[in-house]
Amino acid sequence: MITQDYLHQLFQYKDGNLYWKLNSANNVKVGDNAGSFCSRGYKFVGINRKVYRMHRLIFLMFHGYLPKIIDHKDGNKYNNKIENLREASMFENQHNRIIQKNNKSGVKNVDWHKKSAKWRVAIQVNKKRKFIGSFKDLELAELVAIEARNKYHKEFARHV
Image (cartoon, rainbow, N blue to C red; front, top):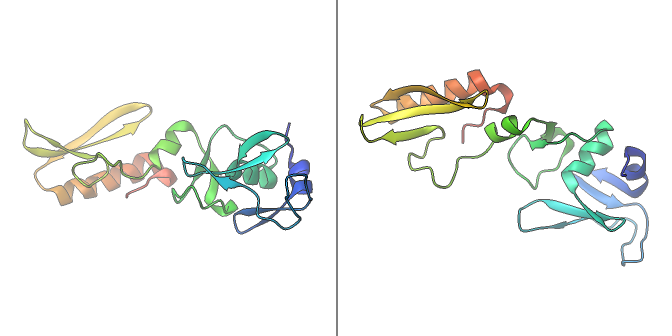
C-alpha cells in the first residue's frame, strides 16, 4: 500500500508535477519528471508495478489520505497543482463538469422544449432532476441556470 511517507521518499513535488528522488532500473534518474499521459487525459505514474493517477498521489502526499474521488477545481485534468485538487463526492464532481459536447443550446443546464417552444432550465439536486423553469429568452434561461447552479451546487458550480 502506498503511504504519504513512501511518496515523499520517492518524489519531490513542484508546481503540479512529481520528480523522482531515486534512480531506478528503468532508466529513471534523480530529477526526472515522473509519469506519462494516457488517452483519457490524466497523467499516470508507475510505482512497484502498479499504475496510479498522478493527481491522487499528489493529494495523498499533501493530505495523508486518499478519498474515493478527487476533483480538479478548474476542470483541467492536466492541472495537478495541489491548490486545484479537492475531495468530492461523485455528484459534486459531476456538477463541476464542463458543458457536454452534445449540448444544443450552448448553455449548460438549458435545453429547447419543442412542445412549449421555450428554453427549459433543469439541474441535478440530491440525485434528482429539478426543473427550474421555462423561458422564451435564452439569455434569461442562462441567467436562471447560473443562479440555480450557484444555489444548489455551491463551490462545485461550473458555468461553462
